Image 1 (cartoon, rainbow, N blue to C red):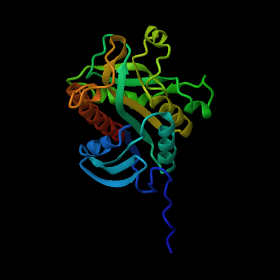
Image 2 (cartoon, helix red, strand yellow):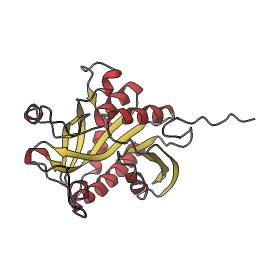
Image 3 (cartoon, rainbow, N blue to C red):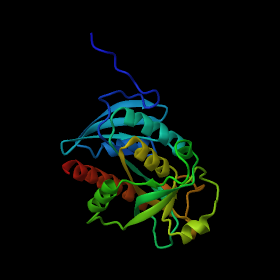
Image 4 (cartoon, helix red, strand yellow):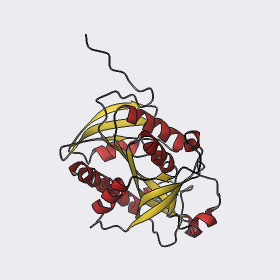
Amino acid sequence: MSAKKRIQPHIMCGVGDVADYVLLPGDPKRVERIASFFDEARKVADYRGFITYTGRVGGVGITACSTGIGCPSTAIVVEELTKLGAKTLIRVGTTGAYQPEIEVGDLVVATGAVRSGRTSRAYVPIEYPAVADFDVVSALLEASKGSPLKVFRGIIQSSDAFYAGGDMATLIEGNVLSVEMESSTLFTLACIKRVRAGTILAVDGNLTRNIKKGEFEENEKTGELDQRVQRAIDEEIKIAIKAVKLLASR
C-alpha cells in the first residue's frame, strides 16, 4: 500500500507538485499570468491567497506561486516550497524607486536587500546579510540583455510598513535603488535553507519624485495599472523564465 501524500498547510502542495525552479509574484492574480508564458501549465493549488501553477518551459520544470504582501507570508511560502524540494526561487514583483534616474516602467535586479522588516530577524540577527544568489543575479542580467527596458542592478530595501515613511534620506544617500516588501526574507531564508534566490522588479513609482501608489479615480490607470508598469511586468516574467532556462542549461 502506497504512503499517503502529505500536504503543506498553507500552499496546499505536496511532493511532486512543485518544480526545482519557482517564480514568486506577490499578487495571486499574477500567477496565472506568469503561467500563461509557460509551454504547458496546470493549476496545482489555491488556498488562502497562495495560488500555485506548475508546468514546463523549454523542457525545464517550473512553478509559479504567490507569496502575498510582505515578509511574514513570504517566509511561509519559502519554508513550505523548500520542504517540497524547490531549489531556485525568483521573486517577480513591483517596487517603488528611490533614485531619481529610475523611471516608472524600468526594471530592477536586486543584488541584496536592506532588512528593514522584522520577519528575518526571527531566524538570524540583523548583522546577517540578505544577499541574492550570484548565479541567479548573473542569469537575470544575462537574460535581460537586449530588453527594450532599462535594467538597474543593486541593493533594494524590504519594508514591513507600506504607508510608513522611515529614514528614506539615508537609504537614498546609500544608493539603495528601491523599496518593496519581500526580498530580504526571501534572500535570508534561501541562504539558511541552502537554496538559490533572486529578485527582478518592475518599477511602479518613484518616491523621491512623489510618484507612488495611492488613491485614484475609478478607471484611472495609475500605479501598477499604468501601461508602462504592465509592460514591465510582462517583460520581467519573460526575463525570469529565460534566466531559468540559462540556469538549467548550466
